[in-house]
Amino acid sequence: MAGYNVAVVGVTGMVGQTFIEVLQERKFPIKGWKLLASSRSAGQKIAIGGKDYTVEEARPESFAGIDFAFFSAGGEISRQLAPEAVEKGAIVIDNSSAFRLEPEVPLIVPEVNAEAALRHKGLLANPNCSTTQMVVALQPLQLAAGLKRVVAATYQSVSGAGREAVDELTAQSLAVLKDQEVVKERIPYQGATRHYQIAFNMVPQIDVFDEDDYTKEELKMILETRKIMGLPGLPITVTTVRVPVFNGHSEAINAELEKPLSPGEARQVLAGAPGIIVQDDPAELLYPMPVDTVGRDEVFIGRIRVDRSVPHGLNMWVVSDNIRKGAATNSIQIAELLI
Image (cartoon, rainbow, N blue to C red):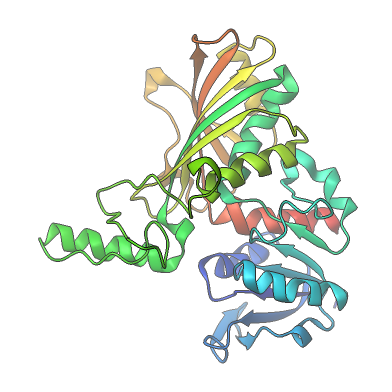
C-alpha cells in the first residue's frame, strides 16, 4: 500500500482529534497510523475508518518508521520529543510555540510563504492560530499595495484554551442562568494567580504578561507575522481578548498601506487570493461570524472599508475556525506541500 506512516502527538486533545478528521477528509495518503499522547491517555481506543487504534504513550522510540509526525501536545512535549522524531527520520510539523521563532525552523502558512517549507531540516512550525488567519488576510494587501502599519484586536474563542475551557464556558453559562455559583479555573489561563468568569464576559488577557505589558499571545502575533511575511520591520500592534464563543476566532484589523487601494479593489484582491472567502455586503447585512466558519478551512473577510484617519487605510473583519485553519488544517497543508 502506498502512502506515509503518520504519528499524531496529543491525539486525545481538540486539535489532535481534528488532525484525524482533516487527514481523512483531505485524503492524505496514509499507510499507517500511530496515535500518541501522555501516559494518562495511553490505552484509550480511537476509531479511524472503522478500525480501532490504541493510544500509546509518546516516547522517543515511538517515532521509528514514522514519515510525518504532527505535534499538538504543548511546548514542553515538543521540545522533548520533536528532535527525537527528526533524528529517527520523521518530518515534524509542530503546533506549539516551541520552535516558531527559531531562525532555522520554517514557520509556514501555505497561502503566504509556501516556498519556505522546502528549506526545512526535518522540523517545521505551525503558527499561532490568530497569526495564521491574520497573515492570510494581510498577504494579498501586501502584494497589491504594500503594508505600512497594522493594528489588530482579536476576539478569540475559548476552544483556543482547550477542551476544558470549552466545558467551563458551558458550565458557567448554565450556572449564571440558574443563579448558581460560577466556578472559574481556566481563564485567563490554567494556573494563573486569579481566574475570571468567561460566560457573558470578555477577558482582555490571553497567556501571561510579558514585555511592555503585552501578553505572550500578542507578542506571538507580532513576531510571527513579521517572520512569515518576511517583513521584519513591519510596525504591528495587537490586543488579544478572550470572548464567550465556543469556536472561531475573529479579528478587527486596520491596515495602513503604502499605496492607495479602495475597498472595492481590496474586495477583488482578497476574493482572488487563495484560502479566502469574502462576505461583505452591508446593504444585505452580510459579514462573517464565528458560527458560520465552524468546520470550514477558509479565512472569511468582511466589513472592508476606508480608514480616513490615515492616507491609505483599510479596516476589515477576519474570522476563521481556529481549530481547523488555525491549527490542524494548516499543519496538514504544510505536509501536503512537502509530498
